[in-house]
Length: 280
Image 1 (tube, rainbow, N blue to C red):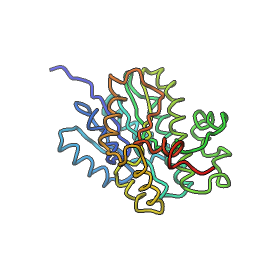
Image 2 (image 1 turned 90 degrees about the vertical axis):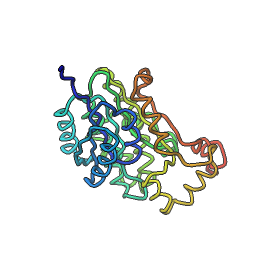
Image 3 (image 1 turned 30 degrees about the vertical axis):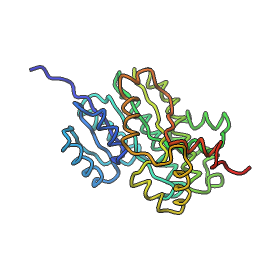
């Protein structure tokens, strides 16, 4: 019997959005689950393995170069890395501005850099950003270019990311998520040289444990207003994000790379041009 090479999908962040994408693209492949907390890995691995998926786990800290490189090596030891789902991060109610920038901005750049070095020909990646990146006023062209292209190890040293400029967690989160989509656009060029694609999804309020933290946190009333006033009038589900993720990672999305997909039920439209618009 002829051996077939093992194709590996690396899922960073074992939450419900990442799992929803993995379930749609992981059949017949090996899913390597990576989360900061092993208990999260184990819970997700149990769910996926009981549904028929081949799964293994590894603890990873995306803000550590050594930890992400160790994950890359673990994936390569299993087979060809044909898919990356990067869904790890912290929310504004969970962390300080410095931690958000280190995990959500620097960590994403690190993942894109190191997996972009090894992604297989024909492979694809999806990074989960956020609608928050679309709420930030326009940055300068130089700021955009720096977020997109500054060497990973120089990112956190950028002048406009220093504490005197970024004073609250929400601002740090917005900058990080804007940075994610810009970084993916730039990385798509490098990934393309390996025959691979990468895109971002910017979800709105999706009912996950992280969203529940926000709904129960200091910005909960604002979140409920966003849901109420949006065109769709409800929050989203992880499965809806999973459907878009599967398109972007599959053959039907083969012409899509370096793009960002806002899926928020119309909240951002209401923020800029509707009843959520800030008073000028």
